[in-house]
Length: 352
Image (cartoon, rainbow, N blue to C red; front, side):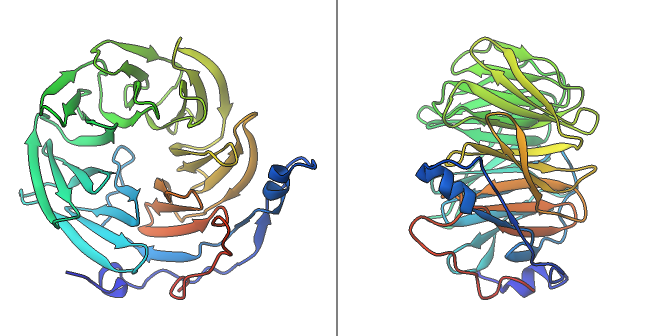
C-alpha cells in the first residue's frame, strides 16, 4: 500500500529561511579534477524536507538506509520505504511483538535486514513485498547490522556479534566488547569487520576468526565508523559527546594514523570516493553535517543544520546526495555533487 507524503510524514517542516550558497574551493591547479572541485556548490539549505514523526532519539540505534532507489526509515515499531524515483512512501514492516521497536536496519541487494529491541532479525524482500525470514540468536536489542557479499553481521546490547553465512545458514557468534555494539561495518574487500561500542573501543575482526584487534583511544561510545574506499586497510572512527574526535587507523597493524578534534559529538561518517573527502554528522553541540578533506582533515564546509543532533546519514549510490535524519524528526536531502553528465534538477515537491 502506498501513502501520500503528507499523509504519512505530516507537514510541519518549514521552508528554510535562507537559500545562500556555500562555495567549496580547492587549491588552484590546471588539472581537470581540481577545476571540478573548485566549481562544486553545496547549498546551505536542503532541497527536500520530510517529516519523521515518532523517530526514537537514541544515539546507539541505526535507523536509516539508502540502497538502490529506496530510502528506508524506521520510526518506532514500523519501517517505511521512500521510492526516490516515484516519490511514493509505503509501510513495509511493523513489529508484531508487544512493546518491540526497531533498533537497526540495513539493505543488501533486494533485501532489508531489520533488527528489533527483542533481539530478533527479520529479512524483508522488496521483490515479493513481504518478510521472508526471521531469526533470533541475540538476547538483547540488535543495534547494528552490516553485510559483506555473503555474510550478515549483527551486534547487540550485550556486546555480542554474530555472523550469519547466507550459503549455509550457519551462525558464528563471538564476544569481545563489554557493552552495546552500536557501529558495525565490513571493509570494501570483505576482509575486515569493524565494530564500535559503548565500551569506548573499536575492534577489528578478520573474516572467519573469533579473535579481534582492539583499537583504544576514544573516550566515549563509538557509533560512527567507515572504511576508506580507496585504502581498504584504513578505518575512520568518531567518538561521542565526551570524546569529539575523528580518528584514522591502520587496520593491518592497529596503529593510530591521525586524530582530529571536531568539537562536537560524532554520530556518522561517510567517505566520498570521487573527491577524497569525508562527511560527518554531528550531535551536541553543532547538530550539523561537516565536509573534510581526507588528506589533512581540513574542514571544507559546515552545512546540513538540524534543530537537534543528526543521528543518521546515508549516501545515495552515486554519491551526489546525502540524506540526514535528525532527532528533530526531520529528514533532509542535500546535494553534494552534480550527477555525471547531467545538470542537477530540483524536485518539484522539494521545499515546503
